[in-house]
Structures are given as C-alpha cells and as structure tokens.
Amino acid sequence: MHDIAFHLLVLLFAAAFLAGFVDSIAGGGGLITIPAMLIVGIPPLESLATNKLQGQFGVASATIAYARNGHVDLKKQFPMAATAVLGGILGALLASVVPAHYLAAAIPFLLVAIALFFALKPNLSDIDSHQRVTPFVFGLTIVPLIGLYDGVFGPGAGSFYMLAFVLLGGFGLLKATAHTKLLNLGSNFGSFLVFAVTGSILWKVGLIMGAGQFLGAQVGSRMAMRNGANIIKPLLVFSCLALALKLLSDPTHPVRIWLGI
Image (cartoon, rainbow, N blue to C red; front, side):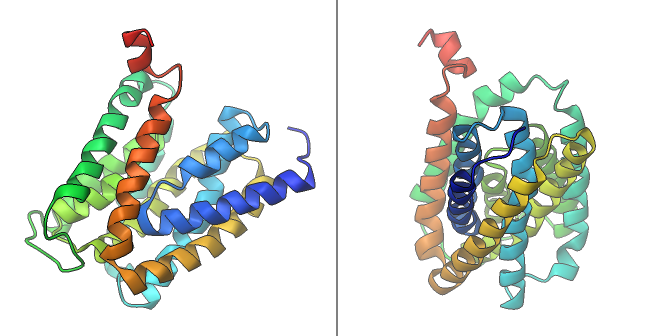
C-alpha cells in the first residue's frame, strides 16, 4: 500500500471522529469508517483489518468515559469481556470458511427488526426492567456468540449487544450502551489479533483514525450521559436502518442477486 496523501488522512481522521461519536452512543461506526477507507483507495481486506485497529480506540474511549461516571463496573464486567475476546478470535479464524453470504443475506433484516423494536416498544427508557438471564449465563452464551459474529462478519454487533442487554439483561438504554462498549472492545480486539498476525493492517492509517475515534467517542459518550434514552433511542434506530440500507445497496448482496435486481 502506497503512502496516502495528507489531505486524505485528514479526511479519514474526520470520518473516524464522526464514527467515534456515533458509535459511542448507538454503535455502527464502521458504517462511516469502512466506506471512507474504500473511497480513498484502500483495498477491502486492508480496510476491514485497519477498521479493527482504529475502532478499538473509540470503544475504549467510550468505555473509560462511562466507567468514570459510574455507568459500568469494569471489574465485574471483565469476565464477559474475556468471552467476547475469545468469540472474536474464533470468529476471525472461521471467517475464511464460514459461508458469509448467508450472514450477509440475513443481517439487514435483523437490523431492521432491531430498529423496529427500539422504535415501537413502549416504555423504553433508562430505567432497568425485568432480568431474564443471569449475568453468568449471559456471559457464557450470548456474549461469545455475538463476539463470534463480530469476528466473522461484524456489522451491527454493537446493536446486537444492545438488544441482548435490554431484552435479556433488563438494562435501561444508557446502562445497556455503557455495558455494550467493553464487550465490543473485547470482540474487536480478538479479531484484531488475528488480522495483526496476517499483516493486513495499515498501522499509520489505523493510528491516525484511532485518534479521531478516541476524541469523537469522548464527545458522544458525554452527550449520551447527559441525554440518555432521548438521544440513544433515535440514533440507535437510525444507525440500524442506515446500516441495513448500506448492506442492501451493495449490488453483490445475496438478496439482490437472488431477486435479480
């Protein structure tokens, strides 16, 4: 990969800042960063690998911000994060053999379903509700499964963590957002380790974008803590729908091929 021009690095920094802002509140930052890298001429594999590097700065930044303000206890959540790391590693290792086109076909519709759930379900707020699954079971089952998906495919993993925390953990939206970040960091880091070994990461680009992610996530997480469900809910719905449309807009998407459109 040749050196990228300075003005393009500035563009990538700005895209990463915006992605960090959005991702710290609702997830879906890759919807901004991956297209930005492709636009400046970075090949798809390197874009995906570099996205795993720079994305960690954003989720780490948001995790720190939420923890400092008492919205998540990192020590208590560390075992869950460890299972997310394992899931991310396994997913990245399986990425070359798992039939990703099945995932690609299903994910947009799952994202639309998540958007409808958060948009239409009454009484969604920052107040906790009934817990359906214990943290121990949640950490041994749901977390590694979503982590595995994050390693294999990736888009929407944060939204799936959010949905699981709200539906199964009984968390309010702000608490679910705060707890999602450390798990996102875990599964991201697991798949990042595999990409680092394969040598697909553009380190200079990833670190510059990582700085943008870190700053954007600081701004976004503070806004989320000030406004809670009032900003998290609409941004989460928008992020899910935008990601679903982005996936379906790809001419190579299996659904479009099957329908001949």
